[in-house]
Image 1 (tube, rainbow, N blue to C red):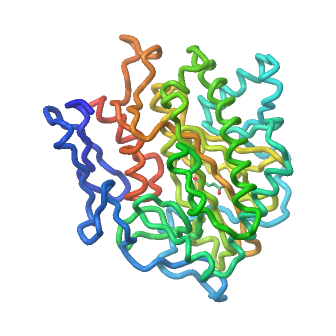
Image 2: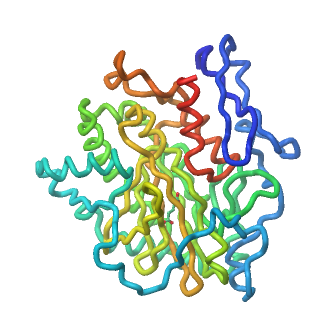
Image 3: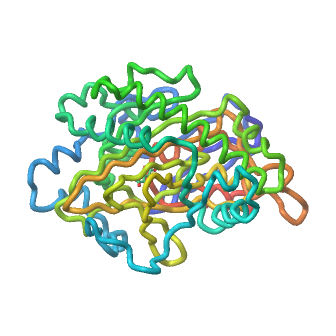
Length: 405
Ligand SMILES: O=C(O)CCC(=O)C(=O)O
């Protein structure tokens, strides 16, 4: 890290994190200050081995037949969902959906579809892919294995309970701020790449096929991620390997969060996942095949994603917005819940190598297009969301404002 890149989280306001660089400081002086963390057992990344308060498993709350949700899950009126999901309701004719892209057609040279994916990255940062090369049986097997895992009694899952230091394992909150409002979901987080971080002992052992299925699923999703990276790179007008190289070449990273959203007694008051943009590179989401819930912020509205059968929903993370110097957009999204049926989704994250510095690609910079973002490693960047939890697009927006003064 050079002298210009000292990162401090200086102070937190209600919805905006201010990120400031300081000149004239060397690497040893690098520090990350986190408000509200003085009572934590701090480790190298500062997040500690303990959550700031006892963890509440959302599944336990859902199973205790409460008439309402505890206060900690009630969002302020301005953040509550403007609609609730009715199960088995067909989308209205003409309802806006995110673009659907046929990947096999692009790979066989269809320019029109290649342009559509480019448009989707620039406008939405979100699209669905069909004919993507991953077997539907494997997709279903992975989702059902995780569904079975979440149906185990809470006590069986506690053996994998996670901590803020790596987030690996069974968890129920994002962010370590004491007293923060919580989301209506439990999750499981695990690493695929680099191989040094892939530790099957940290993956569940039940149901009995889960490790094998998830391992194969991860390998297939890595291949899909690589295909997408080449298309996205070429669509920026640079060499098709350029984005991958910026991610660290073969040393890129990959991980997954499996989200479990139990039925919620007051879905109009809570959110399954608060608005956020993903901090990483590309997210390849396998949504629930029966229950909608993902919403993308577009213009002034939240669009409910109606995923096609066997499609993946792809969205760009903040690192893509940074590398493309804002040509591509990382989109804000959230998840709404319902009182009728649980929902399971698998979010696979194709990310840069954790310590590589990410900044706008040189080829996209000119005197009329100056870099909008200073260099920052992915490790440092994701610390914001791991510390403060989901906060819309405030991290990437604060990051840009630095360079603009
Ligand atoms: O559950 C979903 O549909 C979306 C999940 C998501 O946004 C995430 O895991 O970052």
